[in-house]
Length: 456
Image (cartoon, rainbow, N blue to C red; front, side, top):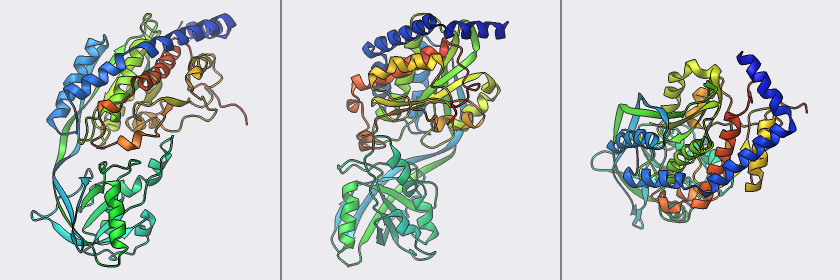
């Protein structure tokens, strides 16, 4: 009977009238989303009532309770918490200064996983590398007793590709510096801003003190080192590591009316780093997907179930594995998954699973979002988001909606990640794209596993 129903739906969608009806409905969902304030209200509530949400902190516990209450308030069903544990790093006191030959204060933020300095601090001569590769070219022992400093800049790009290109100098740099004998590691923030605000992020657990420098201070150290005299820096950093910190993924659903066991999963990560209030990373993603799911079902229950996930430990890891394990038995019934984790900017590119662009439902989606300036490429999506890696590895189809990241890395992981940086109109555009996609996917027969890419 289910097979017969699916064939009948497919036959109906194949008719021009049915396809036009789906397109018109998707456009109506889009227009409602553009005028709706749900996403803004969600992110305002999260950042105002909870604020920064590092894993292992009391604020993360409040965030979990906030998520449960907010999903219930918005009418989601089966709202529940999926607990797990993960390693967590919490920041303590941090100070840095150039002590000679020309004293300066330095603006730093410890990298997640940094070791603390000795109680009295750490003083050592620095070695400045203007590229990460230049440090990697040093043999073992070459940096013995020194503080390695990498000042390679991150270019501004729309698609965030520059972040991927330089990410290793933060995530792997401390470990590589330690292999070469360094006692400390400083890296120019992975940032495109010109302020004196450093940007934090995960830096591994290499056993040495590791911190991000503001872009201005990274350039200062370059200039001082170029004068040819030994430059000494003093670091004083403290931190706490919780080997098994409590963490939670929180989910809620809009149950499907006809095929409730077929599930579409979307979401954003609930945790954040601590300098700002986690508005764009990733309060915006939580808000976008929550609002989109609600709007996609505003005219009545969808045929398939839409599930919203708020993942509890993206920044320090663990939520992807926990989510995949908790939902391992649903992979065959998971229609598609997607994560919003690139801020609050406009979506300019929506990549679909392989072979999907010519399906009638996806043509209806494209027709709805093309007027919003969204490109649907022929190339399939290649990354679902950090929190969905485990689910995708298990076989779930996925989408990748790219937001304009031109300004994202001015704010990311810094004290400037606050609500005032969100443009409500851009946020609404992103909601409109996700809502249109959820509507056509939840109310059609599209089977992303059964599609084949077009012949070259």
